[in-house]
Image (tube, rainbow, N blue to C red; front, side, top):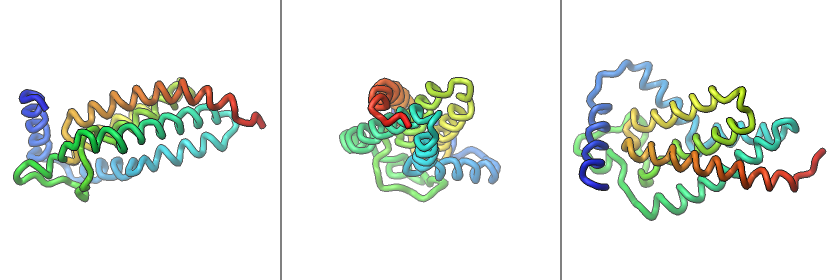
Length: 181
C-alpha cells in the first residue's frame, strides 16, 4: 500500500482499537459479522428467493453475483494480494472477535454483502433499504471489530457493487433458461 493510505488505514484501525465503546455495541457488531460469516445470511435469503416463484429471478441474479464475487475475491484477489490483517502486523492490536488466518484485502464480508444486496435492490427496488443498511453495517463491523483495514472494506464494497451489477446482467440471462413453472 502507498504510504499515505497505509498511514490512514493504521490510524483508523488504532482509533477503533483505542476508542471507548459501549459493550452492547461490541456485541451487536460481532453478531452482524457472524451473520455474514461464509456469506451465510445471503445464501439463506437467496435460497428462499429462488424457491419463491415471484422472486426467483432476483434469487438467481443474487446467487450469480455471490458466486462471481466469491471466486474473484476469495479465490483470486485475496491470495494474490496477500495483505495481513491488522492484528497480524500492528503491535498490541487485538480484534474483538476470533482472529482469522486468511488474508485481509479485500473484505469478503463487505464484497459478498454488497454483491448480493445490489441484486436484491435491483430485483426489489421498493424494499432496498433493509438490504443496503444490513450490507453497510456488516461492512462497518469489519473495521469496528479490528478484522480489516478501512481500505480492505471500501475495496470490498466497490468490488461487491461491480459483481452485483454483473450478477444482475448475467443472472438475468441465466434465469431465461429456468423452467417457468
